[in-house]
Amino acid sequence: MLSTLAADRACKAELETQILALERSIAGTALQLEKTAVQERLNYYKYPVLTLPTEIICEIFIRFIPIYPLCPPFFGPLSPTVLTHICRKWRDIALATSELWRAISLSKIREPFDPRDIWLSASSRLPISISIRGERGDRSCEVQLFAAVLPYHTRWEYLTLHLRGTYILPAIEGEMPLLRHLNLDLEELDEVAVFHGVPLLRTAILKFGAIWGVILPWTQLTSLTLHGRPLETCVEILRRTPNLVHCTLDLAICGHESRIPDVVLPYLESFRCTDEWDNCYIPGCLMAIIVPSLRSLQISEYLIRPDPVDFLDAFISKSGCNLHWQELGILGQRDGHKDSYCKAFPSVRRIFFSGRYEGSSGESSEAESSDV
Image 1 (tube, one colour):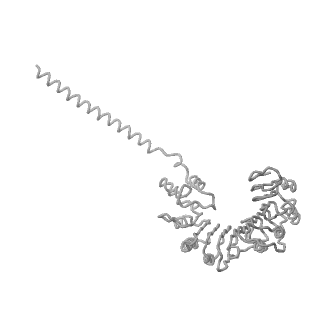
Image 2 (cartoon, rainbow, N blue to C red; image 1 turned 180 degrees about the horizontal axis):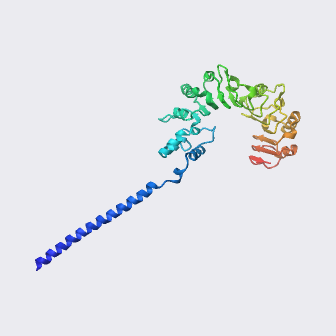
Image 3 (cartoon, helix red, strand yellow; image 1 turned 90 degrees about the vertical axis):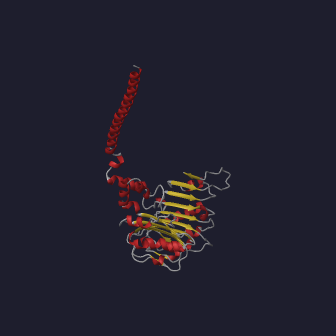
């Protein structure tokens, strides 16, 4: 009897083990089936952004980077290369969207991967914005950077060159039929560089050696900035630019006042004149600039001392632009209180100041910038 009971107990234990294993197998199978069903649903699911038409994705990509002609960085959060790292579909769309690669800022590449050739190729046949910033003492780098973009000169639309070498510009040969905007910051040039074949050029920014060292189709220009030269030099260039609408002069190296023959800019609407080092005092010279259509004037008070209000009154009267004025800006530190300007020019719609009041009128100092 006892042996029979022991055998039954052993059999029961064995059956329980088999039942447990069977239950686990059935449960595992059920879970596996459920997992498969879930995976199938995931496979059929499409993220909303991936369902957008390619044209919409392209537009989103274009709005992701800085607005053309501003140049995005080669690397980092605002670089279009980021869009190629998300998924294969986005990579293909990004590389096929020429607008993403048409603004290129060239400087010495310190990364192991140099993307310049890829960007220039990916921009296809679109007009391009090129910005080259060389490094002092590294002429070989400047040569390399300039050589990379020179073959594309027929597609240049915006060109910015900040170079320290004296041999670069004369190497530009051939027409630049799409060039609209030219920004040159150069040291003294050994040879004069002539820009020809630029029928669309309207805006030029010239700094330091570029003012002496380049010849442009001056009569085409409607916007001109000159930086780092005396007023006498700037006026000689202004005589060649009768169609200017916007002009900025950042003067330097001002000596004694000299008699300058009048220059008339009949279409000039905005004029900004500053002193790079606060050492210029040339109200008489500035009176030589006649601007009958002027609507906006921004000027450093230092340039028109000791009687800035009297100068402005005479300047307006000589130019005959009283009826057009919309804006007057007094820049830098000043001795004249803002009330004196407001009382003298009540018809000007907007008068603003960008500097601290340093006068001794006994009134409290004003805020660093104000608007009336």
